[in-house]
Length: 353
Picture (cartoon, helix red, strand yellow):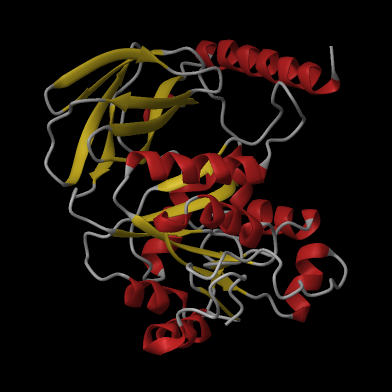
């Protein structure tokens, strides 16, 4: 038995004992709804955690004061294998949470019109909750996939100390938006119905405050595609790259007629993940925009100065336009420059506009 498996079993046993202890204190399961999405089929997303009696039987958030210290949002006890009933449209499905308390349910033949709908999730014990689900119009042809950390919000990831400071210590309403990124996204959207997805390696625990950040800073609303921190059967931590690759491919499958604009930063692996997708599916990627961290941000992100990438590193091929800039204003100017006639820089080499 490997170390990762031992840690995972310890986590599961610790959580099981926590449920028993909290039940004796009168706590009950509570459903935390996340925004789902779909078109012909849809995904309902949520999580079950233990909540105090005055919270478990109400629609009140587990984090009533959104400006509190960030560490509060990580102290939850998830309820694994909890039976739940999910109802949306004319469909009712009985299912259960997974080992980590998550609900990720695929619903076929739902018959819902484009727009925002609600799925009623009722646990076998505790109060139900309504999870929003965005049904994308089949006629939509453009969408945005945006990274979060250092793309729309300055978090100085992935350097461990600063990541921990931003996630666990700083107040959740004190995070700084990257200048001009909200304006950049507004300019990219040809139609209010165009979907925007926020793809991050951040934990689902941060979803409520991240949604508040998106709303407060003028970014378009959209589903979050986050992950679960902690050990897996193959390692102590989940692979951020694999998470992003999997979610991107899921979007290609869910929306076969949409071409995506991929927005990220060069502090982690976004240029390589996006370039790989563009090389594999060039007809499905409308463009790539990479925010370049400045020298100070690179040091804070990596701990040491790093050498800039070679011109061809992490870039897609010439039929997929790519722009780079230090903030949203610079990205928007360069994006508009491509539209004015600099869309291609060659027919058989990486784009380096």
